Length: 272
Image (cartoon, rainbow, N blue to C red; front, side, top):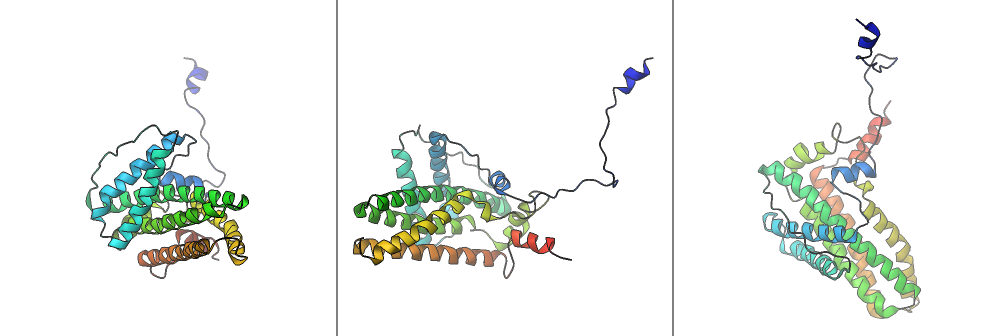
């Protein structure tokens, strides 16, 4: 028997010097955020618009079961209508993708599905808002006050719709969040420190608005923009403040007095 040949059937293994199993020191980032919410990044316009239509129709189908009040539903549908109109007019769009209706099972199934579906719509809304921010900045560069006003008004509608979308995504019992949704964003399912701060579309929006706000305020202060643009800009900043306020309200409902998973991770790693 060729002992050397038989030995080759058993490959070497790797062990640590401390005789322990390795532990992960990885913390969450935008890649984990996208993986959790099932987001595939693509440069294909047709895929983007088809996905936006599919998500919008799924949310509309689910809306009657949410318990959202009439005002929130109206805000949500106003944004969806803008999204669908934009998708129909997109030159590279290849047609509507009809949703597959998959009825969720039980309260936890509803929560998990609505949480992620709501975030899908939220991302599409944010992306459309980012395009509006770019268009407003371009109109200001070209000293085109006639174009600025309607764009600011549309951005305000989308902001209110994004706020309503947050309510949709969180329209399930606190117990379902505590028992199903929050644990799914914690180890071992996700690395520690998972956070909405890794939402690329939202980060882009905040950066864009930070640059846009002083420009709009400066132009309205020196009255180089019409009075209706000044009023529209004021409504936009109110919509942004409302969005922040209601996001905090949703967080407090799910975790009263508690911190985010990211803050929890920071607290744990700084102990000792």
